[in-house]
Figure 1: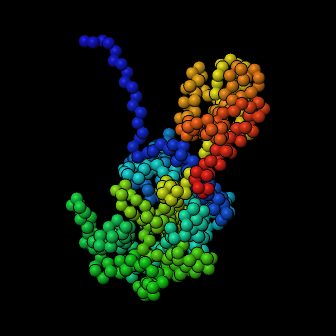
Figure 2 (figure 1 turned 90 degrees about the horizontal axis):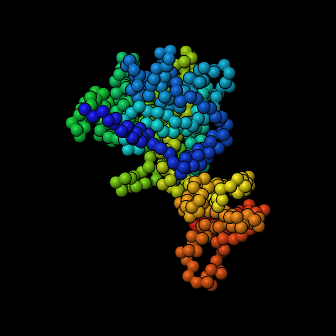
Figure 3 (figure 1 turned 180 degrees about the vertical axis):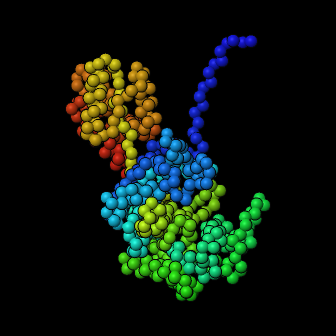
Length: 507
């Protein structure tokens, strides 16, 4: 038997499935985008709020499954007092809990926005992650649909603030009450039909995926997919199916409003919903938001189980090329609606609420496609090189670095092995540093520094062919008194910025 100890295995570095690392470029792009969104929300009078990543699992409402360990859909753990806690699934349920818990202290209507990560314990796939960022805005305590109309206008203003021009987006608006009226009109009213109504809602929600023909099967006898799996339908007859498909097939509300009103005639909910849609349409039109920006569209079916009144969706209408090289419409980047029942769960009294959520990652992808992100330049740091390692020299290098930083210039002193100077310039090149500061013993003795324009130096090395060209070119390295360091670096950075501007066609 070999008693020799086994060599310990090296730990394998691996990213958890369904999660992503965010690099500097993505982080800066998100920061740039969320700053613009935040500015619009602030102009509308909304205030920020931050809630924890964890909530008690029962506070997440419809996402609490019926099982001993509630981890279906949510990531959960048991506290030391045996209470289940879960990572938040969205930003709305935590807001409802916060409002209920602080109801006597907050001013109603309460207008707030929140940005943060949410977590889904679901099977990951292409473009589908278990952690992603949302940016929400909500009004709690405002029962009138003027609050919903304002949300739609704010969504439109937000997209335009991000550089998405009119014609490239539309905010589409529907109303859950109208659908309730349609269901009642075809004989699916009452508590005894609740299960069938839910099946109808789930079938309608598949409209984008399966089209009218697939939804018709799900509304009727059922649908068999390509693998042979059968999904039982809602059991409606053909006349009922036709009325539901007419409702979700309306693309021009002005043309179909009369027929829709006839369809829901005699149903209290349906009539109320049609009135609310017409009211929202009138409000946004009077405020200058025509159907090219905000459009009444009963084909919007997002979250119909969740919402209680108006439902709205922000859709980008321009084409992008997918991974198969096909031209497709970009589609939804956010949406929301009225959810009057959510806060009421905690309160035992009606608390109206409406809000919308932007999918930050998806919207960021859209903005990158349009070239609307990353326009603000991030200049890499000026590198103060290290020629000598004694205390006095190091002190002077650090002093230079701090002087540059104090002047608002991004700077770093080389922290690696300083003894091989060539490695420092290689580091600067790989890092993309615009300028290097060099001071050896001779320069230090005379109180000067060498300032090397690394961008110009790289260009000159590739372009200059003779002495005449060299004399005409901007000097790539110069000597300056230590006292002029900041001014000279600023001058070089300004010249580089001008070169970039010219290269970009003055855009």
